[in-house]
Amino acid sequence: MNKKPVSRRCFLQHTALAAGGIVLAACTPEKTIPDAGSESTLAPQDQELPDSSTGGKPLKILIVYDTVYGNTQIIAEALRDGVGSRHEVDLIRAVDADLDDLENKDVLMVGSPTHGGLFIESIKTFLAAIPENGLANMSAAAFDTGSTTENQGWFGRFIINLLGYASPRIARELVKRGASVIRAETFFVLDTQGPLKEGEVERARAWSAGVLEELNK
Image (cartoon, rainbow, N blue to C red; front, side):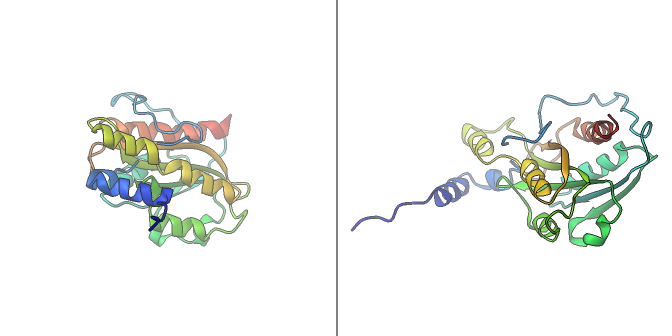
């Protein structure tokens, strides 16, 4: 009897399962929109951050995120802190966000843990609710938290490199809805549940300040 060919999807699913818990929650790289996560670009802990509150008009910023182990929430809060006090920032978990929250916003930042290379269901639901061109004339940025390839075995590194991280996929969804995506970035955790890699909170603050600097150019 001829065996039924195994699809690429099934192959990847079985391969990921074989890798165990590290792979599934390995919050996970792929081609990025500008400035996607680089493990080597950490801001020194005591480095003075750019003052994004100067120059340009005050902005209304919405940060929508979700979290599983708390790492993405820590990064989202760091992004809020990094934009400067001159701007108005709303920080909302995806399960509590709706389309009304997008009203009159200048910048939307969306972030998720990476699971199997993808963003999680609550972020998917939030993005799916936004109509086509619903983000027209809005600037946006995408971020995620994902496992670093450091201290991984060869198979763990292979899976992470194969499946990628969530932020480029979030960025593409934002573009589909009319947003102008400025940056996408991964912030790294050391293990399945964390903690965040040293320096990532500081890097997140600098990154969000950089997003606003791009707008002021």
